[in-house]
Image (cartoon, rainbow, N blue to C red; front, top):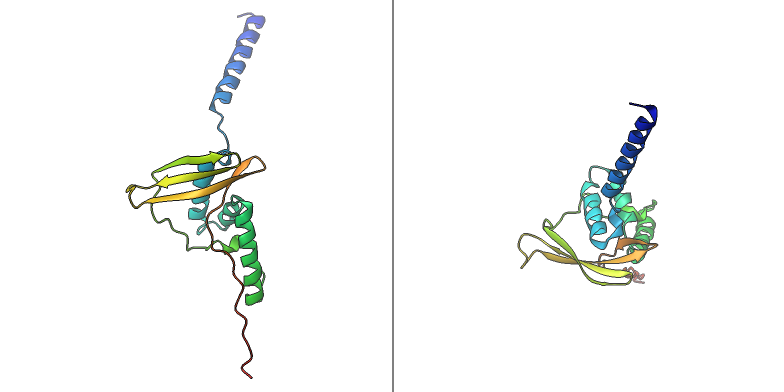
Length: 158
Protein backbone atom coordinates (compact mmCIF):
# COMPACT_ATOMS: atom_id res chain seq x y z
CA UNK A 1 0.00 0.00 0.00
CA UNK A 2 1.53 3.37 -1.02
CA UNK A 3 2.36 5.78 1.79
CA UNK A 4 -0.21 8.36 0.62
CA UNK A 5 -2.96 5.74 0.75
CA UNK A 6 -1.80 4.63 4.22
CA UNK A 7 -1.90 8.26 5.36
CA UNK A 8 -5.48 8.62 4.10
CA UNK A 9 -6.52 5.40 5.87
CA UNK A 10 -4.86 6.62 9.06
CA UNK A 11 -6.60 10.01 8.84
CA UNK A 12 -9.97 8.35 8.20
CA UNK A 13 -9.47 5.99 11.16
CA UNK A 14 -8.53 8.92 13.39
CA UNK A 15 -11.60 10.91 12.30
CA UNK A 16 -13.88 7.92 12.88
CA UNK A 17 -12.39 7.45 16.35
CA UNK A 18 -12.96 11.11 17.20
CA UNK A 19 -16.53 10.94 15.93
CA UNK A 20 -17.17 7.84 18.04
CA UNK A 21 -15.73 9.54 21.12
CA UNK A 22 -17.82 12.66 20.55
CA UNK A 23 -20.94 10.55 20.24
CA UNK A 24 -20.19 8.76 23.50
CA UNK A 25 -19.55 11.85 25.58
CA UNK A 26 -21.99 12.40 28.42
CA UNK A 27 -23.12 15.53 30.11
CA UNK A 28 -21.92 15.95 33.70
CA UNK A 29 -24.45 14.69 36.28
CA UNK A 30 -25.07 18.19 37.64
CA UNK A 31 -26.19 19.44 34.23
CA UNK A 32 -29.75 18.25 34.96
CA UNK A 33 -31.86 18.44 38.13
CA UNK A 34 -32.46 14.67 38.29
CA UNK A 35 -28.77 14.01 37.60
CA UNK A 36 -27.65 16.11 40.56
CA UNK A 37 -30.21 14.41 42.83
CA UNK A 38 -28.89 10.97 41.79
CA UNK A 39 -25.30 12.09 42.35
CA UNK A 40 -26.11 13.59 45.77
CA UNK A 41 -27.86 10.39 46.90
CA UNK A 42 -24.86 8.37 45.73
CA UNK A 43 -22.41 10.60 47.63
CA UNK A 44 -24.51 10.51 50.80
CA UNK A 45 -24.75 6.72 50.70
CA UNK A 46 -20.98 6.38 50.38
CA UNK A 47 -20.18 9.08 52.96
CA UNK A 48 -20.05 6.54 55.81
CA UNK A 49 -17.21 4.63 54.16
CA UNK A 50 -15.55 7.59 52.43
CA UNK A 51 -15.17 10.85 54.40
CA UNK A 52 -14.53 12.79 51.16
CA UNK A 53 -18.02 11.88 49.93
CA UNK A 54 -19.64 14.14 52.57
CA UNK A 55 -17.61 17.10 51.27
CA UNK A 56 -18.58 16.19 47.71
CA UNK A 57 -22.25 15.88 48.72
CA UNK A 58 -22.06 19.28 50.44
CA UNK A 59 -20.68 20.81 47.23
CA UNK A 60 -23.84 19.63 45.42
CA UNK A 61 -26.11 21.62 47.74
CA UNK A 62 -27.67 24.93 46.76
CA UNK A 63 -26.83 28.27 48.39
CA UNK A 64 -29.79 28.33 50.82
CA UNK A 65 -28.98 24.84 52.12
CA UNK A 66 -25.26 25.59 52.39
CA UNK A 67 -26.05 28.74 54.40
CA UNK A 68 -28.32 26.75 56.72
CA UNK A 69 -25.53 24.22 57.36
CA UNK A 70 -22.97 27.01 57.85
CA UNK A 71 -25.12 28.51 60.61
CA UNK A 72 -25.51 25.07 62.20
CA UNK A 73 -21.74 24.51 62.06
CA UNK A 74 -21.09 27.88 63.71
CA UNK A 75 -23.56 27.03 66.48
CA UNK A 76 -22.12 23.55 67.02
CA UNK A 77 -18.62 25.04 67.16
CA UNK A 78 -19.65 27.49 69.91
CA UNK A 79 -21.44 24.82 71.93
CA UNK A 80 -18.80 22.09 71.60
CA UNK A 81 -15.74 24.31 71.83
CA UNK A 82 -14.18 22.95 68.65
CA UNK A 83 -14.47 23.91 64.99
CA UNK A 84 -17.09 22.13 62.88
CA UNK A 85 -17.21 22.41 59.11
CA UNK A 86 -20.56 22.81 57.36
CA UNK A 87 -20.24 19.46 55.58
CA UNK A 88 -19.99 17.82 59.01
CA UNK A 89 -23.58 18.89 59.65
CA UNK A 90 -24.68 16.28 57.13
CA UNK A 91 -25.50 13.52 59.60
CA UNK A 92 -22.55 11.17 59.15
CA UNK A 93 -23.61 7.56 59.34
CA UNK A 94 -27.22 8.56 59.90
CA UNK A 95 -28.22 9.06 56.31
CA UNK A 96 -30.59 6.43 55.03
CA UNK A 97 -33.12 6.38 52.29
CA UNK A 98 -36.72 5.85 53.33
CA UNK A 99 -37.12 3.98 50.06
CA UNK A 100 -35.09 3.02 47.02
CA UNK A 101 -35.77 5.38 44.10
CA UNK A 102 -37.20 3.55 41.13
CA UNK A 103 -37.84 6.57 38.91
CA UNK A 104 -36.95 10.24 38.95
CA UNK A 105 -38.52 12.87 36.77
CA UNK A 106 -38.16 16.61 36.54
CA UNK A 107 -41.44 18.40 37.23
CA UNK A 108 -42.20 22.09 37.45
CA UNK A 109 -39.00 23.30 35.81
CA UNK A 110 -38.99 27.05 35.37
CA UNK A 111 -35.82 29.00 34.63
CA UNK A 112 -33.26 28.33 37.33
CA UNK A 113 -35.58 26.29 39.55
CA UNK A 114 -36.96 22.78 39.21
CA UNK A 115 -38.42 19.99 41.27
CA UNK A 116 -37.49 16.34 40.95
CA UNK A 117 -40.22 13.83 41.71
CA UNK A 118 -38.76 10.60 43.12
CA UNK A 119 -40.90 7.46 43.18
CA UNK A 120 -40.14 4.11 44.74
CA UNK A 121 -41.59 0.64 44.21
CA UNK A 122 -44.91 1.61 45.86
CA UNK A 123 -45.90 4.99 44.39
CA UNK A 124 -48.72 5.40 46.91
CA UNK A 125 -46.31 5.72 49.84
CA UNK A 126 -42.82 5.88 48.35
CA UNK A 127 -42.69 9.35 46.89
CA UNK A 128 -40.62 12.47 47.52
CA UNK A 129 -40.00 15.78 45.81
CA UNK A 130 -36.67 17.58 45.93
CA UNK A 131 -36.28 21.22 44.97
CA UNK A 132 -33.28 22.14 42.82
CA UNK A 133 -31.76 25.47 41.82
CA UNK A 134 -29.30 26.28 39.06
CA UNK A 135 -26.19 28.07 40.30
CA UNK A 136 -23.44 29.21 37.93
CA UNK A 137 -24.82 27.00 35.16
CA UNK A 138 -25.01 23.77 37.17
CA UNK A 139 -27.85 22.29 39.19
CA UNK A 140 -27.73 22.07 42.98
CA UNK A 141 -30.22 20.51 45.35
CA UNK A 142 -32.12 22.47 47.97
CA UNK A 143 -33.58 19.84 50.32
CA UNK A 144 -36.02 21.05 52.93
CA UNK A 145 -34.19 21.64 56.19
CA UNK A 146 -35.73 23.08 59.32
CA UNK A 147 -34.96 26.75 59.86
CA UNK A 148 -32.27 27.45 62.40
CA UNK A 149 -33.90 28.92 65.50
CA UNK A 150 -32.30 30.88 68.30
CA UNK A 151 -31.09 28.87 71.24
CA UNK A 152 -33.02 29.41 74.48
CA UNK A 153 -31.31 31.75 76.91
CA UNK A 154 -30.97 30.60 80.46
CA UNK A 155 -31.78 33.08 83.16
CA UNK A 156 -30.15 33.17 86.51
CA UNK A 157 -32.81 32.20 89.08
CA UNK A 158 -31.63 34.79 91.61
